[in-house]
Image (cartoon, rainbow, N blue to C red; front, side):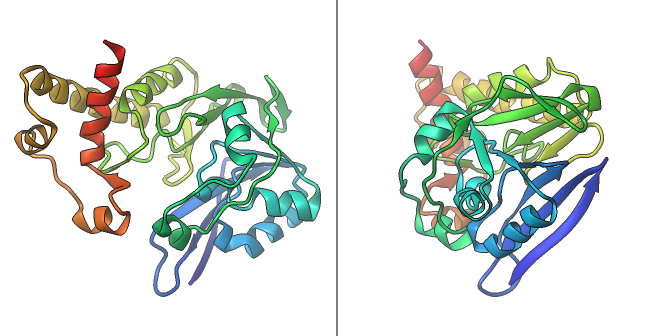
Length: 272
């Protein structure tokens, strides 16, 4: 099944994309378009639709929030087909300069990515809505970047938000770093939170505050038990954390709640 639905967020077009071999898509992702700019390119399974979107909206430049395949999946295709310039964080450029390995579930749900040359972001970019400023927000990935248009009160948050409460984490996420990134964006002025999976047209700051509160509570609870000498598996049980075993097995352990516990301990130990 190929899924495409269009939304309007205060003059910004949001294209919700998803794909599945049968039935509803397992996960969807947004790319956002205004004037001649596109933020993220969606999953490569939806390449035909994304190429049509870029042509119809006369896109001239693409900004990537990070390298993950549901965000960068069509970057090379649109660049090759239409000569569109693609911009990213230096770490995104380094990652996408050559092929990188993804797990079978990632290839199934989103499709693979293809290497390409990614240009560094300008410090500021003039847009129809105001000046767009990239804000490095690592944690979900090392290269993760959000984009602020202060005049319009809009933050394109990539995967920084996702939800108030997180049920599982990637193995390579760093919760401690993500907490710092959430604090960083709360110093900015915005109300509209254009998350790449669950956009919040209003009260975006409250959503970021809610996630920050959740992660800080989780981090503190884990470290309190870790200092007492409790192993990670016992911490998981003591805090009565829940595992989505279907997700964990489907993702080969790359996505799980246990990864969150391990990430907190790893971050705490590395900063000591």
